Length: 158
Image 1 (cartoon, one colour):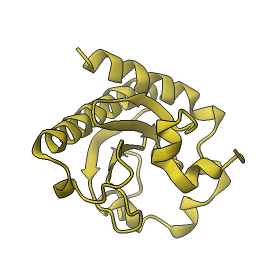
Image 2 (tube, one colour):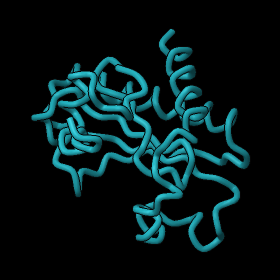
Image 3 (tube, one colour):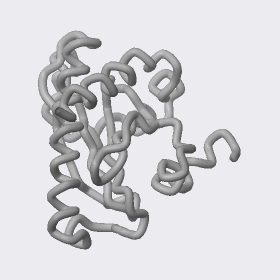
Image 4 (cartoon, helix red, strand yellow):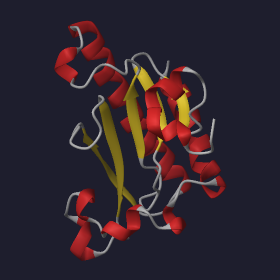
């Protein structure tokens, strides 16, 4: 598999154990650390069924399991960001599905150090170039956050 080939099939690569962004397997999906880290700790919950596009397509029990996983990942991001970063403020949870055609949920940490003109806006309105700048790309410098996320997910597993 080419270095970034997993991005073309995020769920399939997670199911095969080939998605390097996966932090933990959860009950109804995968907790992954985000490709961009301009807000350190950004994470995504991927469904474990690549054919599911919307939350409403899941049977009620799986839907509730996905939402419970989203809650668990949100709390893990909150705890990990408090441990690893300074100025943590809150998390925003979003199920959008406008760009990727598979069910997933975004968990965005928000910080007190964000600029005043951005802090009250949706993350999607951050400068477009930030989404592809090398300085924000997921890499080895995010290992500490990845480890903290995994530890917090494990603690929350009960």
